[in-house]
Amino acid sequence: MPQYVIEREIPGAGSLTAEKLKAISQASCEVLNTMGPEIQWDHSYVTTDKIYCVYNAPNEEMVREHARKGGFPANAVSKISTIISPATAEMAVA
Image 1 (cartoon, rainbow, N blue to C red):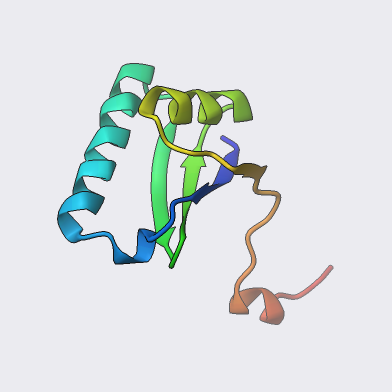
Image 2: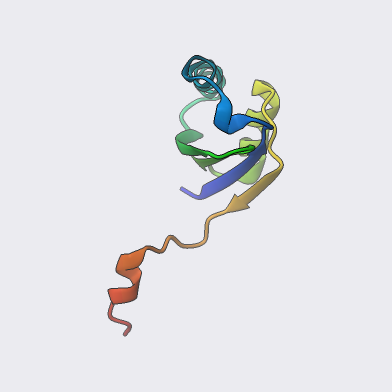
């Protein structure tokens, strides 16, 4: 299934309390439960003023629908083409 990175501009995101992050997470999960198993939240990175989320979904529209239903910003949605890491530097190329 395709993966997407969602950039959510949320001023002060890095200063949100654990309680507020829990509430945001619960709201996201509630929306996901209503949308069915086709869309899945993998994980998110919280930075100073943004949250970057990784989702599995059949298409970008479903990711944007989740954002609309949950009232979350989705300032950019990008399909992941490839994942690289330090291990990529050591791979043999055929």
